[in-house]
Length: 51
Image 1 (tube, rainbow, N blue to C red):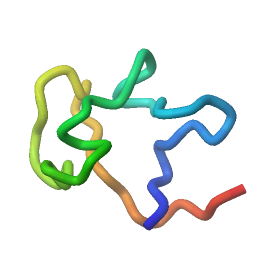
Image 2: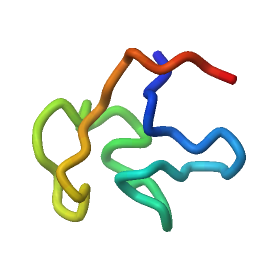
Image 3: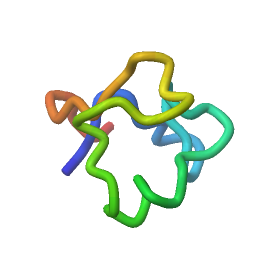
Image 4: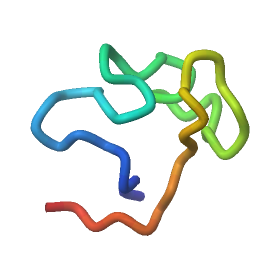
């Protein structure tokens, strides 16, 4: 499912994690519907369409 915060121009990057999405989130071990260290208050938001 797509997230409105994902940066489709850079692999494994988003507004919450501009350097690299943590492995726990990337692999699905943490769905990022709750806080995660370093996420700047941003969470998974499925409303964003893929460009």
